[in-house]
Image (cartoon, rainbow, N blue to C red; front, side, top):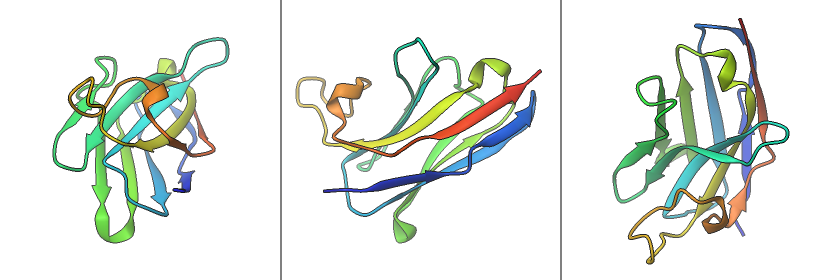
Length: 124
């Protein structure tokens, strides 16, 4: 069982920055950040394959950076140039690679472990 604990959310103005952190109690091949707003499905934000490689949702590409500090067992999401539409509950997730998809999945159902979430609010 892997436990994930997020932190770093908060309220910022449009154009500002935040860094989310997610401390993990164990190892997983794939780690990711998702976000969800009330009434909408949870969507993938960024994925990191521990074998190498990252991917981003088009809406955050160039503004957000996902990274992993193995020594600290901590996953990060650096969020720059934040927009009001980035307002959401952000979750970190961990799970195995998907053989069907040939790597780390963009689908939340492929992720086994989830954090409790941290709220990000961006005001205009």
